[in-house]
Amino acid sequence: MVEPAPGTVIFKLFGSVGLVADGRLVALQGGRQRTVLATLLINSGKVVTKEQFFAELWDGRPVAKADNALQALVARLRKLFKSYFGEQFARDRLITMPTGYVLNAAADEVDASLFERLATEAHAEVAGNPLRARDLLTTALALWDGPVLEGVAGGPMCHGSVLHYEETRLAAIEDRFQASIAAGIELGVISELKKMARLYPWRERLAEMLMVCLYRSGRQADALREYTLVRRRLVDELGMEPSPMLQDRMRAILQQDPALDRLPLALGALPE
Image 1: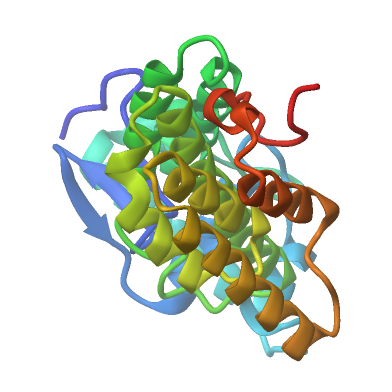
Image 2: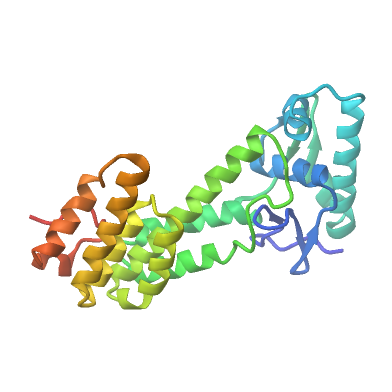
């Protein structure tokens, strides 16, 4: 029973919601127990009111003795903290307030918060140091060892967080591809990029980067074929044309525009 060192991940929202003690996952038993911890972590440092807990645990439906049920869930969580990290940790981190409860956790102690910090830092490095950006994003994405809030039913707050973190994850994956392209190692990502473009056909940024990578590797016809696939899907299923950005990229590839070989990192408009 040792309090973890500062800066180490203690709480998990990716994969099974739970604690990390001595480098091992302590998964919480029961969906409601996981929901309580997830709700506290999503609002780390802020008071979560009883009404907010009720909305996450029971969809706001009237539940007999809901206050008592919530108190029991929090007490069980506090006991878990105490058994793994000591009484002082439990007392300092999980605090009872007049209107609810608050869990105090530093950003780097929560895998989801650490992921966002690394992704944000990498995004700022992409233009000046793409290899460092790629390494930071690789570290960040390695924190994902399962679906976000796995095993949590939850209410609107949890559902909103799932959507947020999934979007952040996809943006980080795209940034990592972009960093590889900026570093001139696009040939090594074509296979993975093609897979992601198939999994997420509506994300035109993936299609654009795949087209550029294929063109730079001497596969102009394949690059144009990717555009045709994306356009056909958009027209057939959504009744819309590709974005002007993607259309510009297709024309540049068709014309073998020399600017494609020195495409700026943002991958947006071609240089004049």
